[in-house]
Length: 177
Image 1 (cartoon, one colour):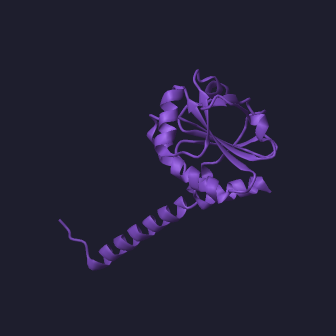
Image 2: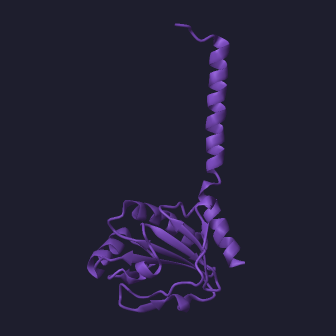
Image 3: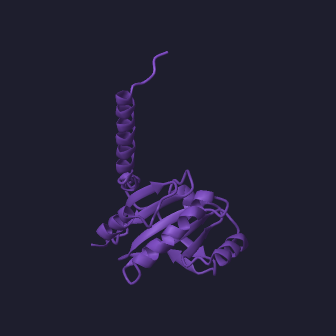
């Protein structure tokens, strides 16, 4: 068995450090890569009631950038990204930006208990029969869609996202212009 020389170990260490640095540097743009340009022709309809029974329609938000997020209380990644959505909403306070959480098929009582317990400050819409989820072709939770001020879907994001990241904020800022 041949032992590695100090020079060979140094080269190996340097190579490992460069690979790690490259991986970390590459992940900086990873969040922005999660924003997939919408390829659907038209924005699907969205008309649901909130926890108080008040109707909300996506058309009511024309002129605003809207983050529509499909989620469920039992979905760990959904719950994990809510804190970053809250920070995003705070960052754009006073601007024409809204977050709509669309609950995927749970009861009003269950969702209401969760919202109160977690002190969520979002408009929470109920999709008890998952009709909106089907219309929007949601196949995984969480699934999010960024809607431009012109009411057109611009991006889809499948899976958990750090909505407080600079890349997320930059994408929303571009839609606000």
